[in-house]
Length: 152
Length: 456
Image 1 (cartoon, each protein chain N blue to C red):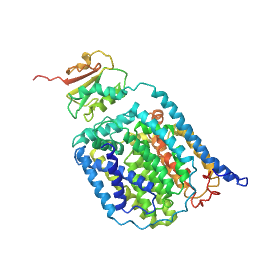
Image 2 (tube, each protein chain N blue to C red):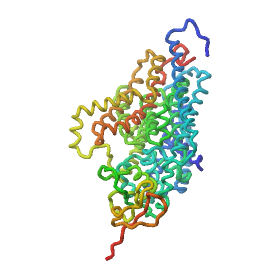
Image 3 (spheres, one colour):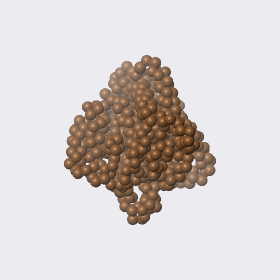
Image 4 (cartoon, each protein chain N blue to C red):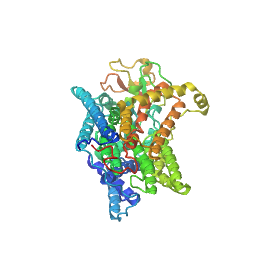
């Protein structure tokens, strides 16, 4: 740092302050983020929700047609806009997990995945109408279904 | 193989820019590296998309093809004679940064990078937007067969199959090299390119102090979280800044008008290939560049600049057209029927609601970073009035945000929800450009301590 001259103009003096302002902001930003992140670092490392859910869906995915379409079925819940399931978040998570198979809400499909929420009972008769449960993969709230064959 | 996957894009970008004759011969090494990286990663996503659109598989075959093409182009570029220096003469060497600044800026940058790595480890698939849109699209690109786009087009409307593919293709391309799995490296790549854009462009403008200062203010806490979220807003902001820099400061970067126009078009095209908002930016950048060229050099030169801009954007525009043909899904942000637009346009309460949301989000954006930056400009350059260097970035920002405002006016979604879920991210788009414009030295300022506010 150069020695301050008593003859320097106010403009130069203000100019000296300008970088210090940004330096203070940078230090404040990095410092506050570091403290906040350090507090979360004390948490035990656990699998995040998406990874954990994906590992639950994987056994079903292996039994699905590679490209789908796969119908999304759920135990009726909160009313939802047309074309959107009640539990939209889990619809998206199942779609993410089974890609590139396509998950559909209303379009025809021979395979379906039923999502009933954690700890829910097996799909009831209303959900099962026209569908046959497939092998139970042991994941509560998740079940693969196949379209019932209608005998001629 | 993981780290090796980052090499071909730099070679690809260097080869393309050299063979297209877009170097001025006056670039500093960091700018050469940055432009090669930005152009190269953008070009690699286009190459990957065209490869997949042609039905070729994603995997080792693609990695080999990209590697071979990159080597061939870089080799051909190496054989080409270095171009003579052109463009405006170099400005005198500015005063160096004070000794405390580089270590401080690097320390703050390292802390933010460490935070991003930590956040990534907690959410390796990113936020809902990232995994339900961008990473989902990447999975279709990478895992789908030759006709991946047939099932892709059937995706639920809320997963936005119409969105451009740069971010998803960048991820899928990375998987083609390194195998599928969430890695922090693509996230860090975007962050390094963001920091690098502001740093290298300011260094090129002979503002070393401003270059280091940009590292302190660029990634606000919100921007850093956006980077870790794996959404497309930060990559878009990077391409917007790179393109707008060549529109607004091409001459001061040492590039002649024709090269600056082509580079501006190249990066604006990549912005359009990143997000739908980038398509709006492409039009804004073309408009501002044409007006500047008209004002400075006349009609004929403006037409030439516009053509070069469009030539630079052409590969990305072609990819968007091919994508639209393969996946004919329209954007759900636009109202389905024209009859519903007029009542929304005439509804004053919508303007008040949107205006209020803009004011609130601007006032609270980036933990106060815009206000800190405004105070910096006031302290550092009290008499700064030079045109068009100040007006051009402001025009780009105002036109871009004005376009966003107009889209909100005719949005078919619940307006409160739409504003709350997107406006803060949209304000991130011009942020690197604003940082660049605020820190760029005034044109023609002699680099003496008396006139340089940065020297301590």
